[in-house]
Image (cartoon, rainbow, N blue to C red):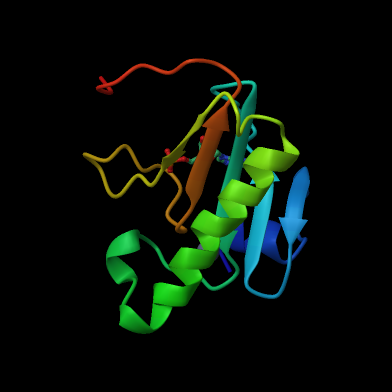
Length: 113
Ligand code: 5GP
Ligand code: ZN
């Protein structure tokens, strides 16, 4: 297994875990871009969000709902937060295992550069 996020999901590589169950893992980003920066990943490996298909709709929904719960836990829900899914080269994806960024704790700009 070459994928670093698969290794984090199975505990082979350490990470600061924020949440874990049989289908999802959330852990703090190694290079945080905001006071709170958590990555939410499915345990199952998908390289990009393009690989997701209709049977995965519940999984994708659970990722968003987990982000909402973690935002409350991290006390960033009231101030507001951002969920980001980067896909491929132009999307700025660097880790090729589907992940959702949960960013908060400071104001963020739009549009992105
Ligand atoms: P992407 O650019 O693919 O959307 O985001 C990948 C994210 O994964 C980056 O924010 C990067 O800092 C984070 N990351 C890469 N390798 C590791 C790692 O080994 N551990 C943790 N916790 N985060 C990582
Ligand atoms: Zn993987």
